[in-house]
Length: 309
Ligand code: GLN
Image 1 (cartoon, rainbow, N blue to C red):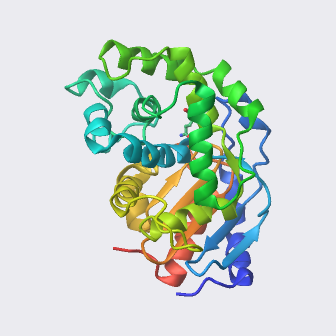
Image 2: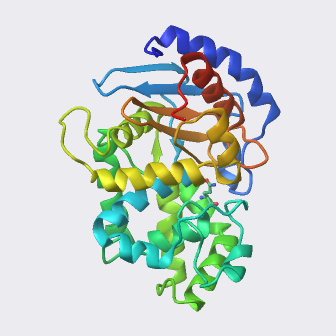
Image 3: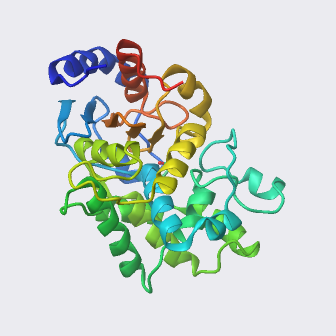
């Protein structure tokens, strides 16, 4: 496979771009409505440190649900598997990412996996540190290392906008606290979670993080193990089974690359031992995945034979 040429990637972006018209930007977080629905960009980051890219590559976007993978990695490293999986399960839900339904019907009452909001809130709850500021700074330090970019920060306006409208996430937290999955002040947890979701970067940064996961946790530049191979494996497995919400099965068949999406339109891909991918296209389909971003990945997978299955 060789999509090392930015020109070839640009041709695919040009073809996939018409799909932006079929979707719409997320509006339940008011500040996300300001995103430009026509945009589409992609970066592919290789283990030798080279990066091919196309589209509006320097534009920043917020991670939203993609942050769930990174927080999971950090908390697995800090607290271990036994702690994490006593609070969240390992199974896909088939429900939308913000659904509360299975919290009541699944016994014992814990979220089915860490990629849905309920599960992610339970994992964020376990980020080590005293204050929200300290916990967020630990997460940011980890993300900066993965992306090899010390300038990464969170978007304060988008974090505030989500914080002000996060009542559904608050209700998930109340449910989790009643069932002893979390025991933290809920405003504090929502504050940390909305800031985590608002961490901002561009496609190159995202592709670089995908590349670290693809390399079983190894830094492509320094060879340093940034996260244990076992943790990278758990993250990639959740990306396959739950990364595209309740479209994960169809995506695995069509594209066959472990991937995680977010409602700002980002998708991070990690093709084991090959490369990382970062895509952003803010127009979403009805399940909350970037509509043109998914099409672009499908076209790349077909053209270069990328499916790992
Ligand atoms: N911050 C968003 C939320 O909690 C993330 C959801 C997503 O990207 N699917 O609703």
